[in-house]
Length: 164
Image (cartoon, rainbow, N blue to C red; front, top):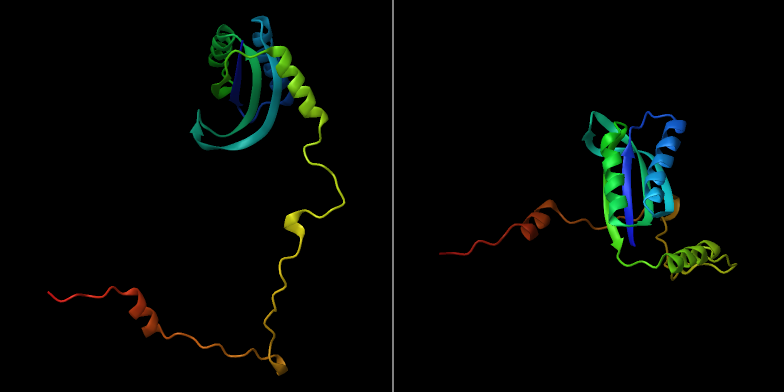
């Protein structure tokens, strides 16, 4: 079996019931061909990079599944038949996948928290070396800083001409 990742984009104005029924239909295509859906991640409505089928936005869904190549071919054929699917893209992630080992790995990932909870401060939260802040002079006036003249700036940026 092979592991695939497919992103499909639906019309943004579809009701939630229609999105759910399409999702179940696509999952059924995969399972009917001996595959298994590992994860379905709904990203929601997002702006498209360019107008596709007169739509500026689309409802994105990511499918991560394991199946044979004929299941992918049938899934893509189904995408083409449904008018509510704006675009889709499938990518092969792995070949020769051991489904049982992959399921165990995914279960372990779900059990472990993505970020350990501790009372210690993260390294980015620790204050950097204390640097003295510039203080205003008495009376609320700031000290005058020497400024470069416009002529100095012009001389530095202009290339030097060489005689011929």
